[in-house]
Length: 368
Image 1 (cartoon, rainbow, N blue to C red):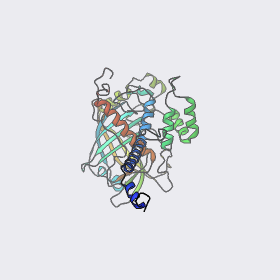
Image 2 (cartoon, rainbow, N blue to C red; image 1 turned 120 degrees about the vertical axis):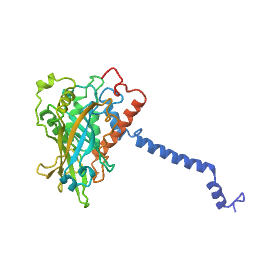
Image 3 (spheres, rainbow, N blue to C red; image 1 turned 90 degrees about the horizontal axis):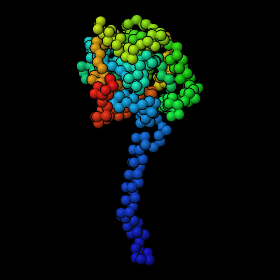
Image 4 (spheres, helix red, strand yellow; image 1 turned 60 degrees about the vertical axis):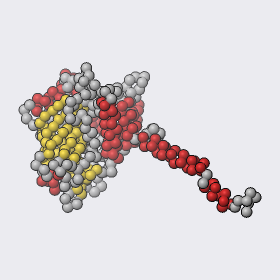
């Protein structure tokens, strides 16, 4: 018995029933949830690599262009078909390799965030594809003309992107920051050497496009292979000289490609390279040995082209992790980062279009 006639257990019971205790507990839980949401949204910890910080950094490298992709902003919609090979069907159970002909909705583009930039100034060219087979399975892929990625990790990727943000005093990226990235990452130095020395093709049609990241092909019998894929053009390579680039029109790639299509389909063969033990699977900055087994798994035929402002590719997110049964992603962190940033960019530009702030991107502005 206590001094006031209550036992210790009575006091503890009253404390347990106190509304203040429950209010404090609810407030604690709510606070933790808010912190978790802010962390996931990138509102705190902004130095870490999130989809938001990546996209913010990409946007900061150039002028705003509402409704356009944050990277590879300038491009054209293309369409055609894909025909798989028996060799592809043996490696993967995906229906796209078995169906006689799979419809394709794609996009050809150049690197950079300016939707009105000069084609001849863009070192990187890109191909994105959506394939939907007759069983409803969908495969999206985004490929680039460079043979390997410049950096090995998402943190390095963010560091490289931020180094490209213009200095307010000069309007250009700080050369010291760019040099620091190259000094820190050997692959970035190698990428810079590729950009300086590799010959420029004179067309989208005779350019190689590489998937860069690793994926898993899963066969009908359950066997698996890690692969990297590439689109290799059937059109012969023709080098474009510096003088030709200097004289080229603003949209010469689209103009030249339209002329090719007028003469018939433009084709690429899809090849996969199979990894062997010890090959770097989760680092896209490291190339695999040239002697690895390579298999032709299909042929892409493009037959038409349309301006992206009115084209079906404008509102399509070419997320490289949208994959059919028979193909799975690897644990490559760059692959996961690409998927997340594509989604963030897609959501931002779609909001801009829906709010009526993207007249140029939808073909309703003065600038075309």
